[in-house]
Length: 442
Image 1 (tube, one colour):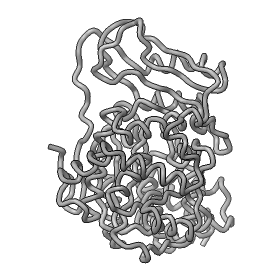
Image 2: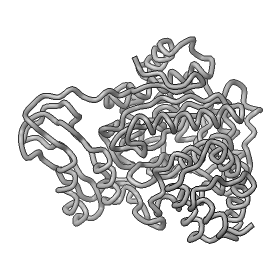
Image 3: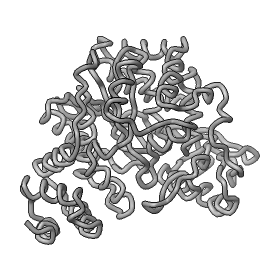
Image 4: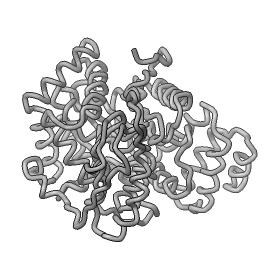
């Protein structure tokens, strides 16, 4: 086989065989295929797409490029959760300890930021000392001891996807259903969880801009899960505006601590409770979603969720004192308030523009080799439907370079549209996809 022939075949709109896909992924992992040829292939897939058989082959090729973690020593049903990426989407930082506190083992493999979306591993690395790359032995040991373990991709687990993940970020090939589905599910399969809950984002701040494509992505991942015997379901949630108020690594850690303390933004807390309830149902720790929500709410109120987060951070080498002293997190040298040009009601908060602005402040990567400023980001002070006054800040920028803050003022202000008429906020939850297909949220 020749890489050039496989690139041309996909470029011309033909379906690739299982053998061709496995060869291409294996050769790239072994550095027989260079980045420039893989970039061409990714663009061909982005433009031409893949059918369900090709997507499944790509998923299994990436999952099989390294070890598959054996979690059979860990008792109970291991449930993983994954978000397709959003802005101010701090759910994993909240859900993992919350669900673990409820008795469901959470074995989580997470990624870094892609494009304008944040990455869980980048956020966790804002915690001084936190080790986000665990060996298989450490991963299982933490699960056995603490009921929770979160790790980034290592050379051992889905390594081919790790290389592709970074390359997609800098080649404008992120928003592709087969590439997203195979990337997510290869990590889920390799990480060894028994069941999987997916949070598929829809809207301006998501890779899937409309409900139709979000359903297609969710259905593709549910099919892959069924193929490998991992029960998988997806909740479709809105990303028409940022989910939380904090956008940026250190800022989002602080916001997660607020939610785990029984406070924090209502929208972020509500989505976490819903996703967590589904995890409890799959993990057989709740009879239904309503019972799961009630159990998780109690854990937020009685302090057990925050205790589990403290335990989790400490177990992975992090400074657990951040829970009570958030000033120990990376602190921005500079900040700047942004004000609305008029008083009125917030009509839109364009999540993608907010995400890109945070990235340019240093909270994400524009190039593969960029170093993140863990203190940089944006704190929003309003949501769609809120009344704002000209005299009150609608957002605050944070970062280590004053010139970057100055350059982003106009972009962030333009991302928050204010008008005179009241407006109904967009729905948070749009529907669910499971083995029975799509059901709209009631």
